[in-house]
Amino acid sequence: MSDLHIRIIQDESEFKQIKPMWNELLKKTNDNNIFLTWEWVYTWWKYYDKSNQIHIITVYDGPELLSIFPTSLKIYNCLFFKIRVLENIGSTDTDHGGIISIGKKDKIYELILNYFNKLIFEKGYLIIFSHVFPNNDLFHMFKPNSTGSTSFKVLKTELTSSPYLLLPSDWESYARSLSKKKRKNLGWSIRAISKSHELRFENYDTSNNNISEVLNLFFNLHKQRWNDKNLTSRFYDDNIVNYYNELTNIFLNNGWMDVSILYVDDEAISIVWAFIYN
Image 1 (cartoon, one colour):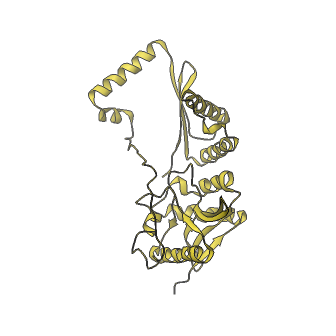
Image 2: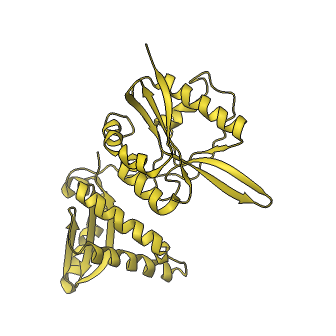
């Protein structure tokens, strides 16, 4: 007999305790991406969201964990009113929000949607989720007729597109995919700069003693780029700088990080801060 029930995590100690089960469950899902790892969600909450109430929705079948939905409760001041909102953890700096679920998804979704109904109609909450992709589980949970719990209206807003390239395993294969003109211009550019300058490329994909120095280069290049456009870089904010420093070290230790630098005559002119995961 099914014993499907919701349990809400509401304090930091429980948030930390669920870490091993969290990532093991994530590995079994369709939406196994770095933005749903415990490390990403916890670190993001620690720097961006800690003043708000943790409200992580978990679903169990008896003792078995089947679903984790990382959310928090927030209060927004709007003129003379206070608006209470349930949001997914990771509403900025996150490319992919979602829910972690395996097994009895229809029943899990119905249970969670019924819980949302109570938050909306009994406690007056708004429910807002961002960075939801059309093909992920969170999106499917809200699709019409997916469950019987459709007594509230779902409003969708497309905020941005997310372009991407599927890259081959080596440079030669990628170069062959370019047009003849692009290959010619690229080769000419490399030869021209190499005649009078020394090019050097460095890669950091494991924990390194001087990673803080590398990140400072990254932050300074970002500031320089935005200053040239008469705009302010986000890395003037110490909280954001500390967040990126901590996240980089955690991900390097996990083998999930790739920081790459292009030098020209020992001057860093470009840095890529990227993830390697799944």
